[in-house]
Image (cartoon, rainbow, N blue to C red):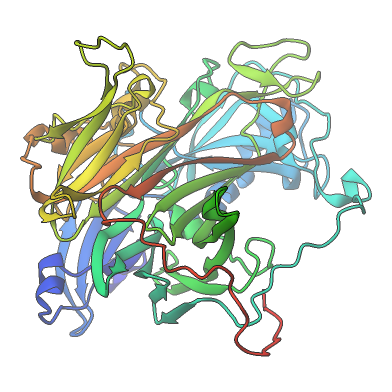
Length: 610
């Protein structure tokens, strides 16, 4: 009824991607949307599928009582407001000498799961910081051992954890120009111009650049998604990846202090990281000849919300691609590399995560996360030091050790849907009379359980995604290889709650037989979940055959963040990521046709627009 409709809120609305088989066959697809809602009055979540052509809700499903979808954008402000207005919170802060509530910042964190029954409530855990003045950075002044728990459905503060007070660190941690002083003046401009425009063409969301074609997508949960990546080789469009995106991430903290030990955010599955994408309009986030794509999402009332310029695409020079100096002839051949960069940047409270897909002329693909922003800080008694973090000043401010673990889901389609995965290790043969022998040995991963793997740098391990039906010039299956850089694993023990919820991060490689319902590494709804019934570790128990099947490859990598003084007060960018390279996919180097020098063809001198 209409009366109850007031208490419904939209978590997300996104395009329901059509069935792959339908797309392949060229049959007419139905236009549908997936919606996730929560009924605040009843505290229950729902999934709906809407037929966009007829305007009919084709399915309506109530989710189990303990299922909590991600935060809605509006809930950050609502949760902070609930904390700020609460008389009990005000009184407790006054006892600590803090009375100006306008300067108090309540940082919205997921509560995770630590064995307590949340009684079906949808909760937010607020960490608390205080500014000394309006533009001051609050992260220099954590109010330690002070946590507010808010029921997001009712808007009530349900719990206040106010333990022994540690003095609020008072030393400044500001980085704005007005605090830092005059900027240096000895750096001369570097100008990046493409007088004839960029080398890509864009039609709607379809991009063609050099030999690559693909579609750009955006979802509230994943942010940037690449679809239907194909590479043109000898006039043939060859499929490489059907769909690639960030599937999940988790940031577990290694500190045993009461407030810090419960910090473990799943920024994708709990926060809908796509919704937190920045508008990249300032020209500082990307330079050159840029094409922007908007991110289309919805607010909690179901109104369309456009994040303008959420995705940036541009070309960058990329040093040499290949070179040889023939010392006998005295001649040199050099070709320059360039890359196509497709990126978005999300701000999750204190932290910035910038996500970059790089496509190269030789068929290689790189995924990079560039982490920056501000550390999630903590307070200790002045002069103390903890083994679980880095003191940032002598005033009691420190930042705990933590990890940023990412999982990227890649629905491979190397020359077609049926692929297989090999693990490739370096081996030294037993019979080795010259003591110089070593070789790369391929081992076929036959089932899902056999394909749960860790990196091994001592064996120079990589993985190869191959198509047995498509052969190269030497009659070997065409393939791409995954170079597992930054292949770290979760540091938290297997008995910890965060490890049980983020089992995808215990290992680096997972391979599953494609199932359209298996979308996110930690399961569909990790918010407040136990990890007991959804996610990669559950699906792979089926141990399906993965030889010559439609496969999804999931790669987990991360940054082991041992904090350093240089990360404060704002952190210089750190790169974390991996490479995909053609490995027998082509019969030879596919870039022999590059020109030695790219000459201007017109006198067009239009300035690039950033």
